[in-house]
Length: 232
Image 1 (cartoon, helix red, strand yellow):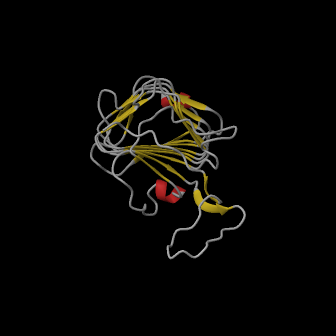
Image 2: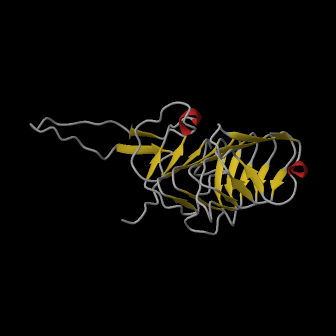
Image 3: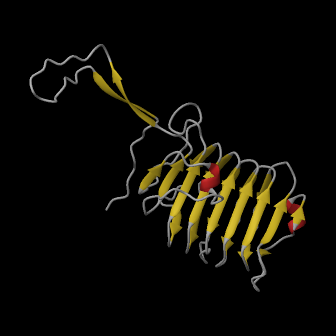
């Protein structure tokens, strides 16, 4: 189903999906301008929403099926997704910035996968907006996710691991991921480095040992970041 604007969607609850399991229902929002979907969505089967312009989801979404939301521009998820009926799985990918809005919560029985090619921003007031029976992962393609003018904002999301050097294709499941730790995690395209820096010279007077003076050796990290680990 391809529509030019939300006025073509009608009023009331929007039902997506085929309960007979005949593939995936796709709603394409073809207009390049900003679009807000405010009406509730009920999933009757696996579904996908695709947008060309900036997309904001403000209506509740419920149903025990998988949902993918994909956009060529910014995506803001600002609704209770799976609040009264958990989704089977949830995936959302923005080719620009993906934002969790103030009232955003996402609940699923299976995996939650979120990706922003340029940036990820969490502005949800819920301290644990991602509620999954499996695991959640957030991928960011931000070239400077921890600094600069447009860093990522995780807002204290408690996670079990951070993974670096993850490609967009890996994040979206197009190509296999490397083996990752268990639990929930943040993944980045950024590849940090760790190197040794030597100032001056290192000399050793032979004394029968293998020890060397370390005063002129420094470990230099680039892009490394401390974790906010979940309490055990």
